[in-house]
Length: 387
Image (cartoon, rainbow, N blue to C red; front, top):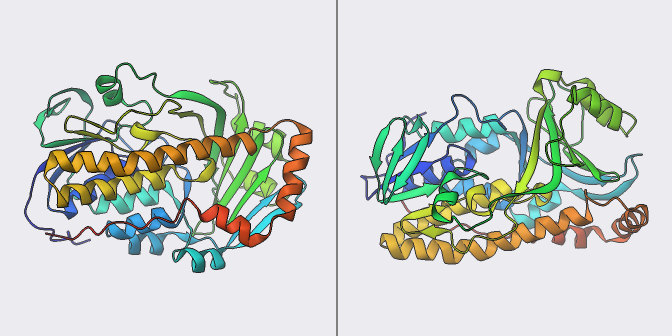
């Protein structure tokens, strides 16, 4: 891939963290002419790279603004159906993904995380350095690769952010959400619907189709923190093997070594600011949220575009103030909504509440359900005009 000609550097940035948000921030900053280096401590793919992701319209628009939208559409799978079911297969809600695309103006796109990482890295030739950040002194970043000066530091180092602990020492940090996630990408292709969620008692099983015919599935379980299973795939067969198709088929098409298991942590206590001096916090480092609305990565991508736009149109200090003012209210409101969605969705264990929820879903008009689904995705990116 040819490197875009984005003009000469206007400033120097160091991005701490090479996940989706960090890579997107680096692309946005390079797009406005900044010199950027990304430091990522993990030696290979990130630990969630073997899973999939479904990007709503706002996330797709953010990638369009970053110049990655065409590659996303080529590698991703458009989600033409969106549905919610009971464990026995009864339909609770069904929506036409094409109609959602018409209303939103942009499709819902499913893609393997490693493919999205690849797309973003290809826009950053030589900018990702495998090194661990061990400290920050003003605008000097100390890494295992040496010390690096920057005009702006982007803290995109995840839910357990080292930089958040350093700059906000009184903040309690991330707390366990009450949910743990087991997930995988199938080792062989199979027929499955585009995007489906199935709600049981205190559990959710979801799956999305990928372009190569494989599928990504995830099981969200209400469980104590730190619970692990000797054989996670066998445990999923035990719990979900009698649920409606294609759930048993998805599990049968999965290799035990491909299964990932992560606890879900979130920032229940909001950060008082997404900026400290010339350090800008982004993605999970700023607003780690539960996955119930599918907005975690989308919000990180929005952060990246707004940060780049702010620095393109303002001096550094006013730009960071603008970034905080724009991003903090929206992302923190969505984090609260995601927490509430979990309480009314996967985390519900009371049979009476489950029955009432199912009945409410069945009588909700599809258009009203679609509006509810789209309310967090009605975001338009600012223009990242190249210098």
